[in-house]
Length: 99
Ligand SMILES: [Zn+2]
Image 1: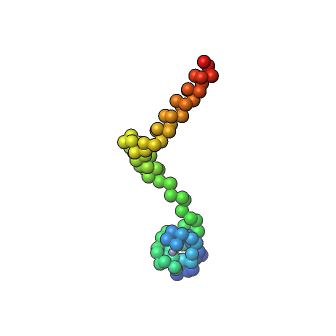
Image 2: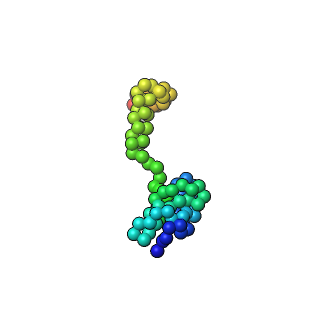
Image 3: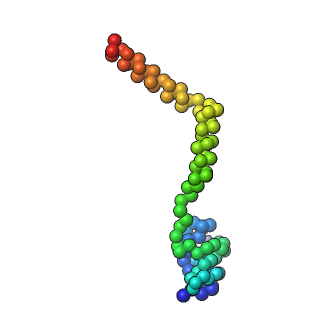
């Protein structure tokens, strides 16, 4: 059973690793909130689990939107030119074989 002020290992989001923490809040005899002994930041006890990698769907959508807007505005003129050249060369080669 945890008690206030107990030393406990937990993942610190600021230190980005498992660090020593002090229990600052209890819930059902378990640590609810902890404070990092190293950077002194308080956060919910996360059972030593690192947070999932940051894949924000809204951010991804915003990035896709930005890329689409950039492409529509002709932000990447080199890519379409290369894409356009390749099929022309292939068509010419096929045409020669047929003829
Ligand atoms: Zn920390």
